[in-house]
Length: 273
Image (cartoon, rainbow, N blue to C red; front, side):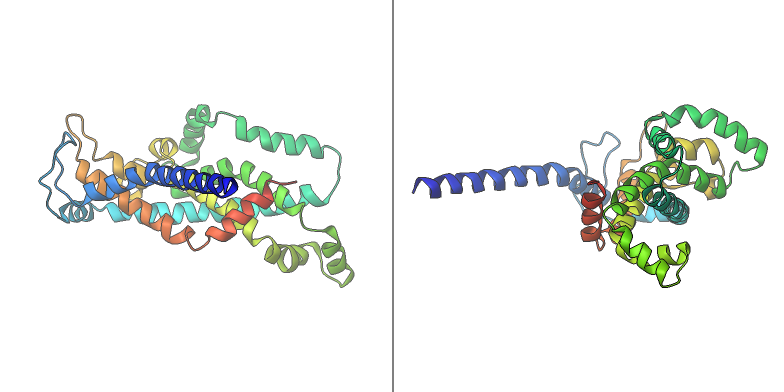
């Protein structure tokens, strides 16, 4: 009887904790979505309470969806580039022992702790001299460079869980290293690659400072810059901000919710070495 009562209290406490946690996570999202379909005052404390799509029509007429398209292909290109580099780098670090391997891996991890924000000024000067200001190529290269250290670390942790005997068996059968990676390693490590791609995409998706420094033409801006245009010096168009925030969230949900299981398994296996 006591055990049953203790178990009931424990289950009830867990249910209450999970419920409170979900409310804490979902309440801001619900508030933003609710505000996006209402006429909100500039003070953000009152509205007429009626349903309206004017906020979405407003950002549509302002060309906001161009920013969504720009962010999608910039982040996708940067993620593909970063994951490709990280895959080969992680394979080399996990499969080969060579002089300076520890130093190389430590240098890569040091990139995670380096405050990259202080690089904005030299990056701007270098890109200005190279003609990459107002160029999506420059932004793609920057995003790929900033997310690559962590993705390498994640994939190295995942590759250590894959036996080297698989590589050796494929090489005995006549495969070269590139074929081993493409035909043997890649199909096994899809969960880890999905986790790395998710991290890289989301980091790039929400980045603001580099985009602000490198992009000034309106038609080339990304979502964070597009949202900022609704913050005026005197007042803020909160309805447009919330509608834009909802639109900015939808692509990430559509892309990564179907991959949730692979993402979780990739993170947990990549964290164990």
